[in-house]
Length: 466
Image (cartoon, rainbow, N blue to C red; front, side, top):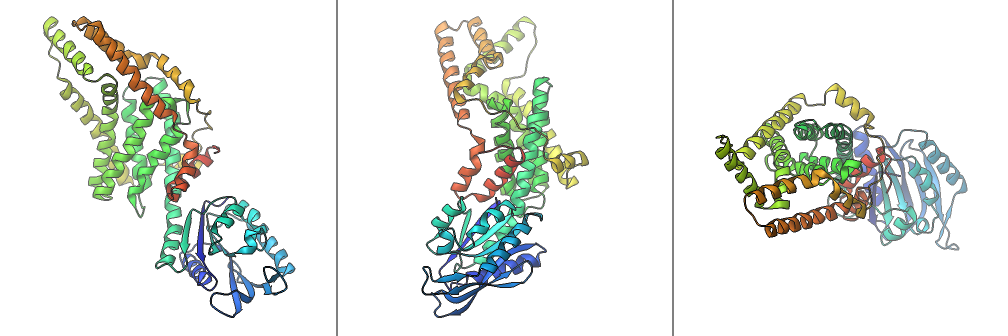
């Protein structure tokens, strides 16, 4: 199937064919290969009426074929040339033997195609050739029927008479390359999270969060280099996090939250300051700082101010028993965040100076198969098993023991347990709603065809189905 499907809409004589011809000329001038056909009207009696005859011009060869002749005894009143139909089938079959076409233009789909006639019999063969962008001229009022016959909705609808229609079409063709790049880097980042990140976590390597957050910052820098709108790099970690959710480790709250928030922080920096060393350094610093602070913030969400009380109690006990003065919690947390921010900012700026990934990372991008197809995500109710992991309960148990040791009543600890379990249930419930294989479809339904394209391409490379 095509990656991007665009409808150019309008009635008879609304210059749809002229618009498609200008689009083809513009893309050819950019060095892009263009396939498809234009319908040339001959003998149109009025601007809003069908012509007496239609010829098809094949864009790849310039060949013109007699296609449809008006015959008032028929309904609809056109007779199609059988010989041209055979030539079109042969042409469509040849496309399957060639590399996918960057742009395929079809002019036009009307009542015949809505009934499965006309050019519609070519569609299964053309779709199987996997063109990148398909632009179809669609008769006004028939968009819904054409979508039903095509088997998928249009990602973008452009009225032929709209001001700036050609610019919008050209921009969509250019954006295709950008969103494909984002999907490539997002998929590679997700693969690294599912393999390198999982290995570091399993081995309990110290500072693994810093290592992965720095790598995520570098991937966003490499992905954003050369983009017309660099702020789009915010989608790289969303794709990475979506793929992470498909892995066994994706059931954990912290990795998913970390990846998404890192993208939002980095993207906000680039959006506010532009694509320069200041923005990239700040973006990397924010990514690193979040990696350092997230665990503490999550524990504060689960335990509230009792977490701070427990730490202060330990500090006072150390000072009293061993005459050791520990730094206050804000200073300790701040120093930890500064360390992470400095390292991640340095990695981001190094990536900016390199301008392209190192050779080893380029090999990963070339293969883009770093992670094998992950096992399916567990059903939501099964995620309650995560409550049985000792890592989940350890902070609560430590804080509870400290509070009891300092004279807090059992009732206060019981209320803390209620809060801990309630907040944990909410977090796991929210996580259970994540169904990344549906994200592309939902994004398309909301008109966000670019992110949908990037995410679906990353999923397809990993063999994930909807």
